[in-house]
Amino acid sequence: MNTRELEKLIRKCLNQFYNRRLQRLTTLKLKDFLRRKNPYLYKAIGTEKASEIVEEILTAYMIASDEGIFGNAFFEPIAKLASGGTISPIEGVNIAIETDNKYLAVAVKSGPNIFNSSQKKRQNDEFSSLRSRLMKLHKQFDALLGHAYGRLKSEPSKTKIYRDRSGQAFWTEITGDPDFYLKLIRLMQDEPARHRIIYKKSWAAAINLFTAEFIRDFCNTDGSICWERLVEFNSGVRLIKLNENP
Image 1 (cartoon, helix red, strand yellow):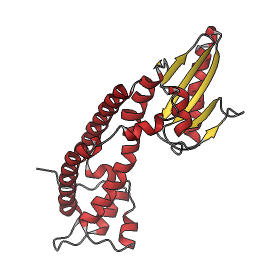
Image 2: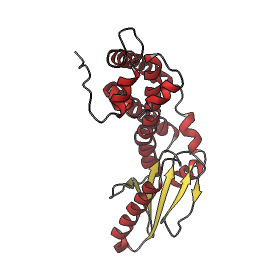
Image 3: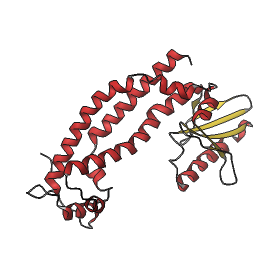
């Protein structure tokens, strides 16, 4: 893949990332992220402003969401096209790179710190399932869990059949270019700044909307936060009925 083709692909993937990011932001409901946070903590640290609670919670939610969206919209399609691979025939494995005597199965993840023990087991099971389906090919099966950034490196063991490669090592292996990981950041150029202008407007609108909703449902008539009502909504056994949006 030459520089012009890669730059075009990066621009396309960034567009997809921001479109999905905006969609997530504009379709999110206050209760979706308010129930996941600790209201006791906000009270304990002396938070008194509705807007402060809303912005901190929404920021944390979107940061976590962005990681998954970016992996799906940016890293995965670039890895597939830059590697010259095909789509894997099984869920949980993204790319298949096949030669005369080897079948390289690649699962692409954003970073090396996203898996817990159950997710690692599931990933291993998905690689094992694919290996079983491909036994008739009589080729070496090589399972690779690739991380788009980071420094993790591991080999197969008694508990997993795949190896880990991260950052430069991962991109070099699937593209043959030791500088590919640097090109990804370099060729973004000023595209993120252009998108950020649009995103900031939607972000400000979301903060205003959610703050107004929070004040309506969780503040007293004098403007102070009604902590008991917030905790009841967050943790109570019975469901409380909130005012509906007009």
